[in-house]
Image 1 (tube, rainbow, N blue to C red):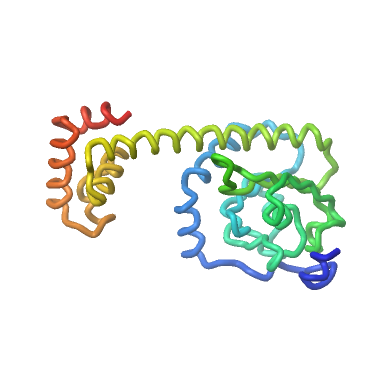
Image 2 (cartoon, helix red, strand yellow; image 1 turned 180 degrees about the horizontal axis):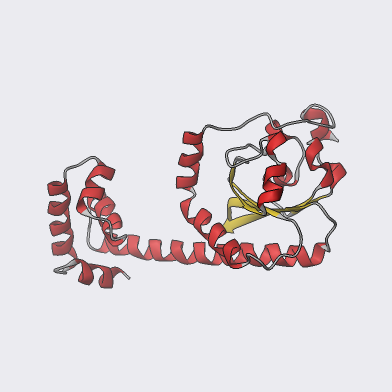
Amino acid sequence: MDWKSEYKGTSLRELKTHISHTGLKKRQNSNKKVLELFRSKLNLLQGQFFYPHLFFLVDLEGIVLDIHGEDSLYQDFEPLIVRPGSAMSMESGGINAISIAIKTGENIFLEGDEHQLSFFKSWLCLCSPIKVQGEIVAFLNFSRHTPFVYDSIFALVSSIVASIEYELELEMQTHNQIDNLFDTYCFTAREREVANLWLQNKGALYIGEKLGITEGTVRNFVKKIYMKSGVNDRGGFMKKFY
């Protein structure tokens, strides 16, 4: 009731905020890994649902990064213009499962009438935080029109979240190990930038454009990196760090 009072009333007809296409791309890029995992995990489940549903991946500020589910349901969102780039925070969308999860950092289940957005009053939603090393990095929201057994849906959403968290943790551990090796070989800040992209199998031209330096300068950095780490080629470099 305090939130309803703070965020103006008991019902909203539409979301108040949508970020630009450019702004969305920047957010998707900064959340690239979790977005890739969200898409890959849900693609594996494609065809295994026998009821209308939607999944949302949402960043820490409540911006929808992606929506996964049935096209027919997605079209139902058009009157609200709920799409990637829409803000589901309380300031924009009032009380909803996502906005409360952001406020509390907890798993949140919300029934239709508990939503302030009028369109969502026919939906049931479950939102769970995605955490890496105890820190929330994003939110996964499951929604559907028709009633569902909470325990079974919570188990499904929890398993997807746990799988994403596990792979994010692995990547972070690998990144930390690589960072420690960079320290061991006394790479400079610029050498670290080049080495990280070189380990991602990026070319000298791409790295130069990314870092704002020439292709020749990149190759000079690569030579220094090889010399410091005691390798002669990219294969040896990759093997040493992975």
